[in-house]
Length: 383
Image: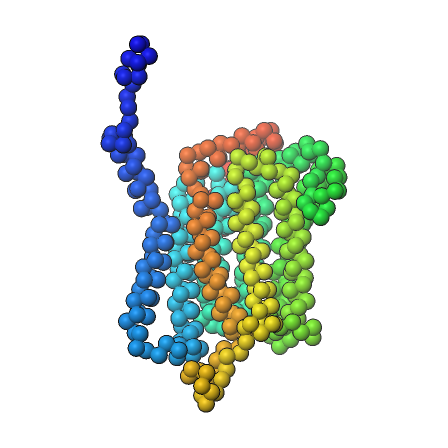
């Protein structure tokens, strides 16, 4: 009876109670204020607007839009919408980190990682608008991509308590774990093992921009031929070198994760690893795929003569290289929209606003180094 009286006297929260209504309203308000919600909203209504324009102009011979001028304009509009929306979403995330700065050393690296979306979106859009600028935009992307990998490495180092903290984590392991195909090798860890991981990543940071710079020079000399698999041109050799370097970097990154995943667990490292690998490595392979499609004539010249019944009014058409530039960069603009959504949760400012993440990192650094993090007392710098 006492138990029943206690139950009857305990407050019951129902769906109609003020507390439940307040919680529901706050959830709805947070969704409405979310930049992801607004980004999806804008993309949705832009798509509706394009469909309405298309439906309203149904008498128009839409086959004529295969003409390069119209087709490039249509692709530029679609890519521009995604590029502008994803850039605005990323800028909101960057501003939120500025407004909720509680751990400057890690947040400034996160800001630089998030900035890859505006950089990629802007350069891809420019490449669509001006074909001749495509190879220079790729050079900018390669340089910033290498910088982002470096920032990601520094971010992981901060999570583990600095370089000394990483050393302490590695040397406590029974052996170094390697992914396939070297999983049978089990060397004893040493403090130098940390430098092996870092070298595996840092070599790509130097080689990728260097190869992109060489590609620009070869293109100016007329011996590069982007996307052409001819061995008297520079493209196959540059692609091979970057591919080998990228494979080594990816292997080093996976090895580093396998050996530190337990210590990194409070920071939810797996989504961060995946989004970095997708942005950096997937886009490179996407470019190689486009070149492969051109090599097997899936992408081909669309030039034709007006006397041809299949010409559809196009007298110039796209070259293979122009088709590759258009398709590759419009995909990048669209992909940046989804990456900006992923960044909202993966590199969120909220764990910094409530102070839980900074407290964990500061205590770990102090434990590993027996002193406070000197970066916390340095002047505020983000870029």
